Length: 289
Image 1 (spheres, rainbow, N blue to C red):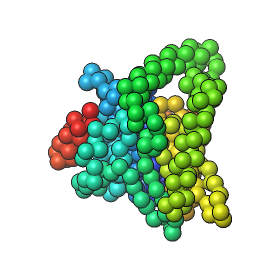
Image 2 (image 1 turned 180 degrees about the vertical axis):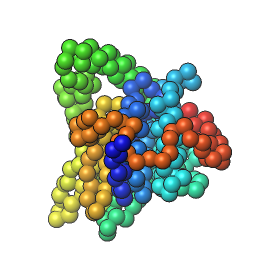
Image 3 (image 1 turned 45 degrees about the vertical axis):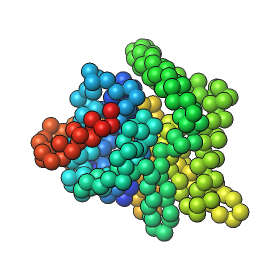
Image 4 (image 1 turned 180 degrees about the horizontal axis):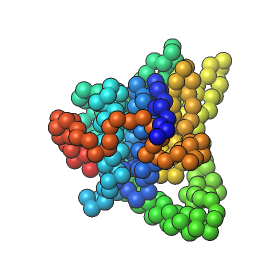
């Protein structure tokens, strides 16, 4: 049986996974996690969706993602969980470290002499700051749109056509949405310039990006890790370079190889996890919801 070796990476940044919602592409994320061996894994907000969480909907694929991350921790990966707006209930527990797990609001890294600033980015969203009810209502509407999108894509694929993203088309066609994204990116970049960072990484807006901007002879690289609802993207750092991972492109490169055979992995997602880790994650899930 042919197996592909895992890719050793220095840093991986994921955000906006939204575990516990119908839109979360957990099976695809688990396939990706099995393919990598990062020294640092940054979970940059909205990992578990406390807004839409329902006890009757947390399927096996979602649990497997959590167990996979736990296994990575046990195998030496440093996991940094940075809080977002959908898991904001965890903010009262920030600055906690338990083994290889770290719960923070923001993270600063020094990578090959470059100062990197990582945070979710909901602080820039005025709706979040001044009208949480409206924000949650918008989140519910977005989830309904994603559910409708999945039905449309099922029909589209049966007809031999490709997937489409209804929300992306709406965002790209609505002037205010386009302006919000532009303002978000500019605000994050301006703050990075002000505080002397070389790289600023956010999530929140579900718009993957790597973009270097210049001001007064200095430069800042703005990045966004995207999401695992529509874009299925991650940021990867290795050999002094950042790159944007896209799951759809990755799948094309491994066409014909069974997902279960793709990567060397002596552990199965159903393997036992030490009781201390299991209890910790159970308590963490309760706190997150």
